[in-house]
Image 1: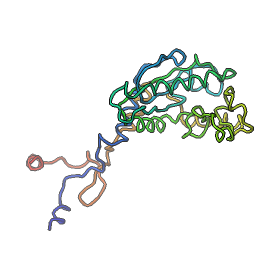
Image 2: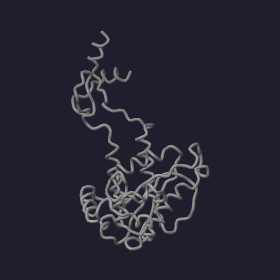
Image 3: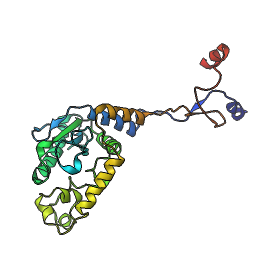
Image 4: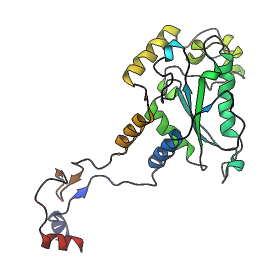
Length: 259
């Protein structure tokens, strides 16, 4: 009887339920907050406390990155975990975020034949411990930056060559495009030839056009947040329907539904 009564219930059921506490939701919010931060010169950044997420932005003349240069599209995004996994404030997190950015600065500064560290800016956000991974995941999925390993194009910026096993590997695409790190120079073979990397960059940027403005980012972000589309409801018998089609309830029905 109860099942039969439920099937006769005229009230529509939403097909989704927004959960503000879900990791993907918090990741979105932290990621958008990072994008809202001012850009700073990577070359002149001073040491600071904190862990969190960041993005690198390119403003230079290197031809393969011409479509990215001076846009709001990061060429790389990443995270820095706190020194103390239980840290509740920035000092307890250590200087991990600055350390990560400084590490990238040193790598870029060595690639003198193709890059200038003065052509790079960064955004960063110091976040409460535990939120950095979800934010990084969202940023990578949203922007698909060409230097991130997940995109599988020009990865290797964060790679180290300070142990025998690493030195035995093939040269990363980043080091092929931007020679200068001594340990990478000693490797015998590239993972990919430069012409292939350049072709992959061009194809990727044609498929994933860079965001030219912050307004474009916000528009895509809002579209990504959309949960309840017009046909996002069902009847008690699982028929998909639009919530704004059909006859409006009578005054008597409305009164009953509110109780």
